[in-house]
Image (cartoon, rainbow, N blue to C red; front, side, top):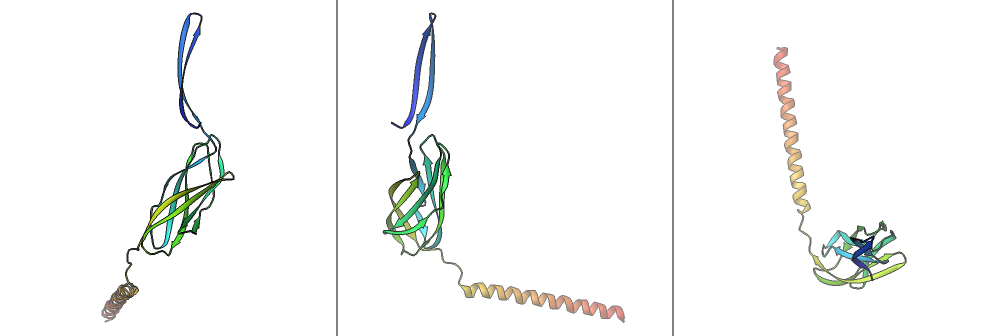
Length: 166
């Protein structure tokens, strides 16, 4: 059975006794889901999945598929995890769902195996950005101010040059 273990050994020799304690870990070809992005904004969003290799050897071709409401919305790029290593599976997804709580699954793939883990995700409306008209108004105002400053600077330089010539 996989897990962390402690071994206590007492060795007797030549009328002497030696005690030795050590801990060790026994693993199996397995991958654990440690954490995932539980809240997503509508639109394009990073989705992060933290996983852990529970085996004493590397796991190759580790990736995940995220499904919400029965629809696959993300497949992460694959990674390799060294023995007992934790890693991050990450991808960009587009969330078109209305705000609310949704059931879904994360299916993790590794070494020809797969595990499907049920999850819950909260979809929220994005923070409202400035309206484009406000962005352009600010930009145009700044450009007009810069143009006025340049014209005023040129005017004063021209006036100074005229005075020097007189």
